[in-house]
Image 1 (cartoon, helix red, strand yellow):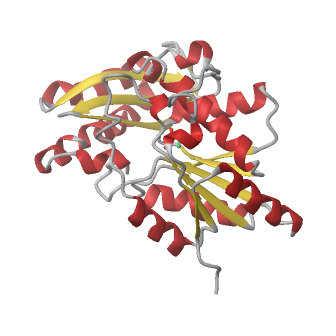
Image 2 (cartoon, rainbow, N blue to C red):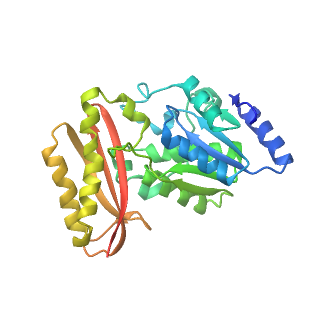
Image 3 (cartoon, rainbow, N blue to C red):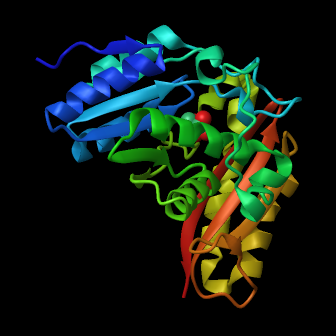
Length: 286
Ligand code: PAF
């Protein structure tokens, strides 16, 4: 019988739990989340349980990664359902701090971990400061928990790339593991924001995964053909406002030139009604 999940709201309580786990020689995995959990998060937890003796999940809607006109207030918050789901999955503890616990100086941190140039392109261009907010809170969570391994979804490819680079740049003693995106049977990538879609918008949101599939089907014709194929999906889909569509080299996250060969990552962001969604997929140009 696994031990019941502990709900921790203070940094001190997390550190005490980690101290005891370390005294028992146990490996720790961290699953950072903003809650409103779905099967994609469950996969993060399952991967964490494969790689460590104990999983600690955090549920914290981090205000520092939301811009002034973004959906911080509307972002779904379902703490009871999240705790129940994490308990069911065998998570040892969930860290659910208040904003004050994480940012006692007026809800923000003056000291930032900045994502640099790659934090200002693509997703970062549309959401200025977003990745600085992400890297700052991830650094805080890594510092609070001190896990052996931390799990992140591949759906936010730029976030995963930037977290990996930060860990390398700052010599943080943690292994970062990316976990594949979980999709609905019709291709829609699972996202906490999907639950903000209105009924008719659910079908419109499929434009993102359709665009990725269209790009993939043109992979034998190179970068330009892939972009054109993906773009054509948005020309016929009126309910969706494309934000960006880009093809990067996954090794560098730089835009892939027209003559690129080898792996490419197609990235898409679009607004479906009031909800902004992202998705990506990796293909190979032979
Ligand atoms: O991917 C997310 O849910 C968030 O960006 C993260 C990593 C939990 C930081 O707030």
